[in-house]
Image 1 (tube, rainbow, N blue to C red):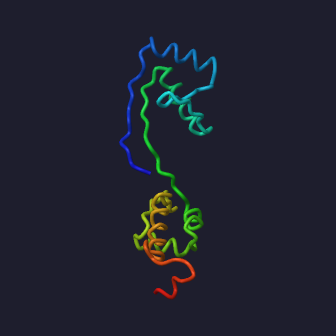
Image 2: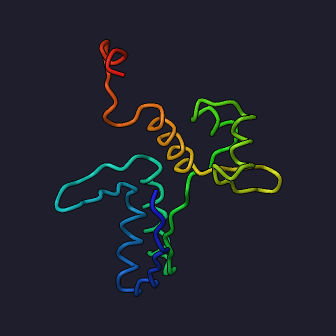
Image 3: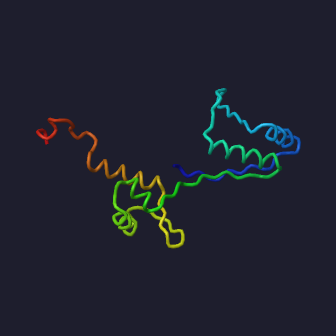
Length: 138
C-alpha cells in the first residue's frame, strides 16, 4: 500500500448538496463510472462511498485518507508462516517495523508481506535452476 497525502474537499454549495441529498434519500444504489464503464463496488467500499456522499450532501467538508491494515502478532505470524515468538524476535530486532497500541504490538500487512517476499527471494533467487535436473547443475 502506498502512502498518499490526505485529500480534503470543501463543503458543497447548497445548490449542489440539495440534489445529492435527495438522490441519496431516494435510493442507496450508487453506481461508479470510470471512463464510461460502470463498476459495482464491494459492500465495504460501497458503504464508504455512500458515507462520503452523505457527508457532502449534508454540507460537511470531508477529508479522505488511507489507513494501513494493521495485524496482531498472531495474525502476522500466521500470514508469514512463522511462530509468534520468532515474530516477536523480528520486531525486537527491528527487522519488522512494529507499532504499539498500548502494550500490544501491531504490524502493517504490507511490511509483513514485503519481509516474506524477501525471505522467499533469498531461498529461491531469480535465475536459480528448477526441476529434477536442478540438483545436478548446482
